[in-house]
Image 1 (cartoon, one colour):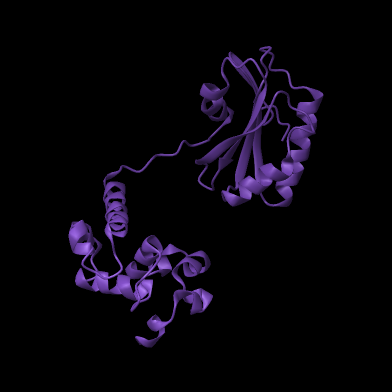
Image 2: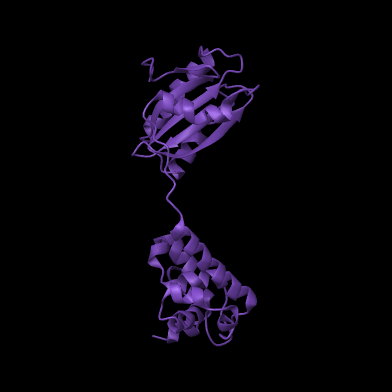
Length: 231
C-alpha cells in the first residue's frame, strides 16, 4: 500500500493525482489528505505530498476540527511543512469554520415580469446609456446569476447570442430573462428588440433553455414580451 507514495506525484496515473482527480470526479471524491495536498503542493525528499498530508491527518485522527487547533509550530514539526504551508492549512481551516457559521444566502425567486424588473431596477435606473443584461434562473425559478451583455445600444451585432447561451449552460440555467433599458423613458420595443427576442427564443429553445421574458426597462415602467403574449 505504501509503495505508490514513493513515486513522484507527476509519475502517478492522472486519475490518482489530487488535482486531476478533483477535476474528473469532483471534490467529494477526495480524502481529507488529498484535499490538503492540493493546498501545500509539494512533499519532501522522503514522502510525496499525499503521503505527507496523510501523516498530518493521521496525527489528528483524520479530524479537520483537530487539524484546525494545531499551531504553526506543531505543523512545522512535519518535514516538508514550513511556516508558509502551515499558515495556508490553518487559513483553509478558518475559512471552513466561517462557512459553517454563515447563514445560507437566499436567492431571489422569479415568478413574473415584475420580479425581473425589480431585480434589475438598481442596476438600470437612471442610466444615460442603453445596456442589456441577462438573468440566469434554475429549475426552482431562483436566480443563479446575471450579467451585462452589451452597452450602448441593442442591435443584432451587439448581442452575441452564442455567448449568452454558453454562459447559461456553464451556470446550469434552465431559463433566462433578457432586460434592457431605454434612456428615453419609452417602453415601446423597437424592431431590433423584436428581432433579438425572436432569435434568442429560437436559439435558447434549441438547447432546452427557456427564454421566459424580455423586459424593456424604463424608470417608471416596463414592457414585458411575456405579458404581451409574444414569447
